[in-house]
Length: 295
Length: 95
Image (tube, rainbow over all chains, first blue to last red; front, side, top):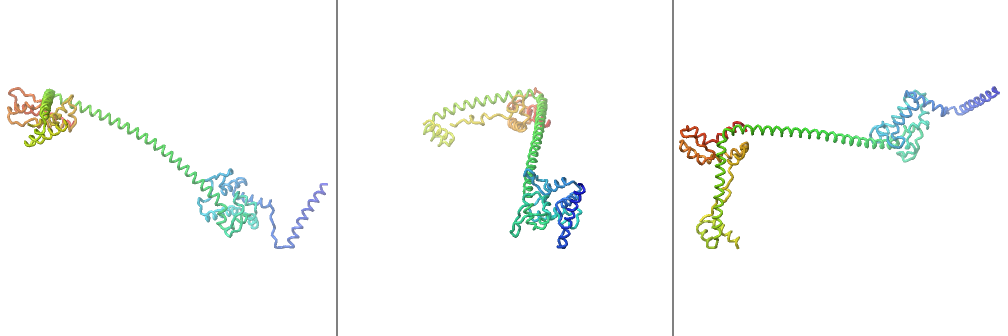
C-alpha cells in the first residue's frame, strides 16, 4: 500500500516536470517563474546578509522606512531619513535605501530582479501611502514592487515617503521645542537659584559693611571724645555763651515784633504817603498791606 | 520810623557753632558743619596783636576762658583761638 502511494506521488511529480518541459519546448524564451517559497527563501538570504534574524531585520527595516509608530504616533527622532522637506532629496534617499537593502545580499542573477519585482517585498515598506500614487504624468498607479518604486520619478517616491517624513519632521520640531522649553525652564530655575545666592551674598556684604561702618563710627566718636577731653571747659563756656546770645536775640526779636505791631497799627493813607515821601518804601508797603488786610 | 528787621530769619539765625557743640559734640564729625562752625568762629573773633587786645576781643568769643594774669601771649592767643585748634586736631586725626 505504501509502495502504491509512493508510486502515485512520483508519477504526479513526473507529470509536473513533464508539463514544464513541454511548455519550455513550445516557448523556449519563457523564463522560469519563482514560486513564493523560493522568493521567501531569497528574502531570508537578504536578511542573512544583514547578519541578523528575519525578525530583527524586519524591525530595523520598519524603523528605518516607517517613522510612524504602531499607534499612529510619529516616533520622531528614530526616523533615519534626512531631516529635510526637499522632495527630490527624499526620493533619492528612498531609492538608495531600497538598493542598499537588496544589493547587500549575495543573490543569483535571476533571483535579484525577481525579488525586486516580487509584490510581497513591498511589505518591507509598511506604509499606507504605498497604495495608489498619482505620478507626474497624471496617471494613477499602484506601487506593486520595489523595482517599480525604484524606477519611479523621485517626485513620485517623495509622495510616498514625504508624508511620514513631514510627520517625523513635525515631531522632531515639536520635541525640539519641548526640549528647548525644558532647558529654558531649567536655566530660569538655575538663574533664580544663582540670583538668590547673589542676593544672599549681597545681604551679607551689606551687613558686613554696616557693621564696619558702625565700628568705624564708634571709633571716630571715641577718638573725638579723646580730643574733646582737652576742651571741656571751653565747650561748656561756649555753649553757655551761645545759649545766652540766642536767648537775648529772641528777646530782642519779640520786642521788635511788639514795636512793629504798634507801628503797623497806626496805618492810614496819610501814614503811607508820609513813609513814601520819606523814601521808606518797606514801611509804606507794610502799612499798605496792613491797611488792606484790615479792610 | 523804620520797621525793626530783627524778627527776620537773620536776627535769630541758628548758629553753626552752637549746632556742632550741641550735646556730645557729635556734629563735629561732619566735615561740612565743622567748617561752617569754624567760619562763624572766625567771624566772631577779632585779630589782635597785644595781650590786652586779645583779652578784650575774647569777651565776645564763645568759649574763651581768659588765662590768669601774667600768662604769656601765646597762651592767650591759644585761648582766643581754641576752636581753630580743636578743628585742626580733628582734621589731623582724620575724623
